[in-house]
Length: 174
Picture 1: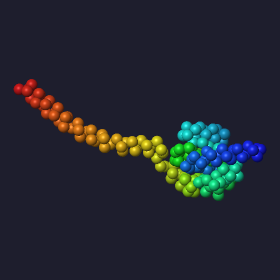
Picture 2: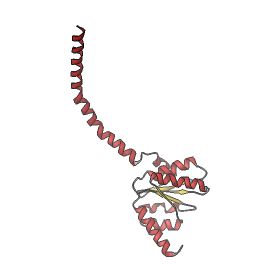
Picture 3: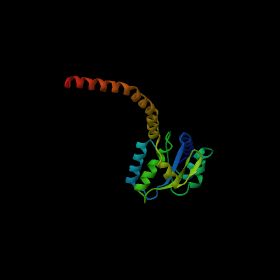
């Protein structure tokens, strides 16, 4: 790869990683072509970007950013996964695939907003609810008081209707 192409690649990766709150590094030694295609498809479906880049170029791309803490993990064959918005998505996809394909993909570690994560921390991060799950939970919490208030407003009317219906039933029976 020519120097200009490498500089352009480093700048491109730096820009993309600066928008990402987290990154996950994997050792993909032993990953078959079929498994690699399957893994990349899972990444795309989850909105996660995955690239295999030389360690030296990754190191230059993260220099001076929050993700610079991953530099000690850049040894051996390294793939890097990240997402633009959801900090949990890369960890979820990588941990799930690594669990299903233990001999082919190994989590090296990662970074979350400037903090270095080891393999166990990435796995712990993957068990947390994602951005969409948190939004739906939050929406449910916001809707719960309104739903309960509406039920309280409807209760007297329901009791009144029940009382009138009981009176009508009594009159018909008599």
